[in-house]
Image 1 (cartoon, rainbow, N blue to C red):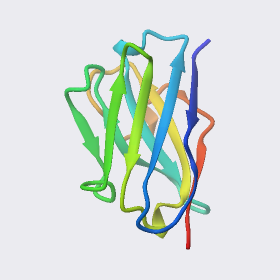
Image 2: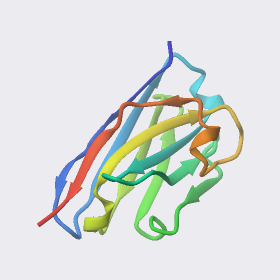
Image 3: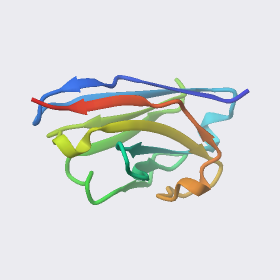
Length: 124
């Protein structure tokens, strides 16, 4: 049974930083492209970042470029999202997702497995 478990969310002030973690189990982690998505209240799910199975290729949404970093540790079955210079508009539930394709993808429909999400609130 595949499980993706996110952690690291919380309340942070504007300009602050958070690192989200996603622990994967039940799949050959090194064969999967991993993505981070988010969903704000009343909005659809949007891509934030993605990383190829090897870590050699990444994708970032325009809103994340220059502020967020995605990384993975295949030995630990973990993927991370480091978020700096957080803004109020980054407030959302953040989801980790896995797809068997080799290329990072920003389309949620291409991802097979999803975590339950972790809440990030950016507020003063």
